[in-house]
Image (cartoon, rainbow, N blue to C red; front, side):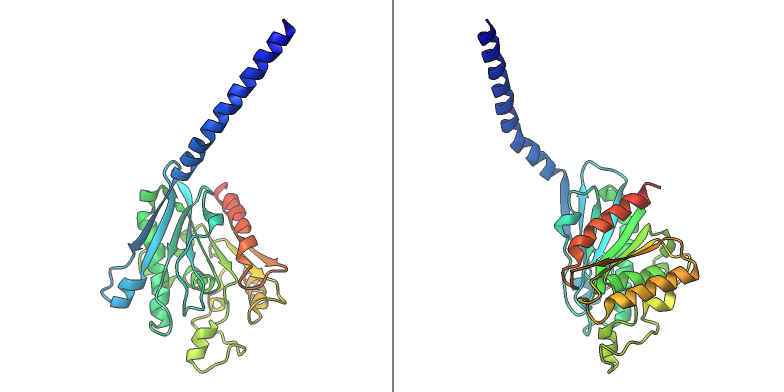
Length: 279
């Protein structure tokens, strides 16, 4: 009798195991279907041909979550190259991700490029509810040139004000290795070399203020970074602290250079989004 009971129990375990294996592909398929991506949405009404070509964005969102945190992501490339993309680390994370292209130097002037960045954020404010995102939880992030652009439009309030958006309503700024002095490719157009720093109207440091949104500054290893980028960001962090900013942090990704530092930095981005949206 005991052997019969054990055999029955074994058959039940076997049946449950087989059922679980049969359901696993269905569960994985359901998880894949939970998120959708819509590509190449125009975010500007400009009739400029180059703007119509470049000013497009992709939206990655959950079909099941609502009022989700949003990351507007600006790619790097020295303001002279690069294209929108969504890193796998931002996917399946409960986030709505908006990845935006923008016009590039030297084909477009820097003022138009900054306007593009502001227009992409403004589009997000006006439309993200359609993609289950929250207007109250919009974070702006980006790597290198993207970090520079977001610092500029997040600190110099004029760019977003043009689109009736208050920069201080952003939930946070999260630059990955963004230039804090005037960008080196803007200086190149002025005949200034990459190692001769300037701080003018195109430098985020010019607009340091205590009432800016929370800022998470992430750099690569100071010995491996591009053109002393860590020291720029450390100075940026210090000036924000000195003017009285209450929520600014600085991280150094030791062992990671300018190009590889985003990989560990995405984890920090997600942790600070959780921290700031839980308040």
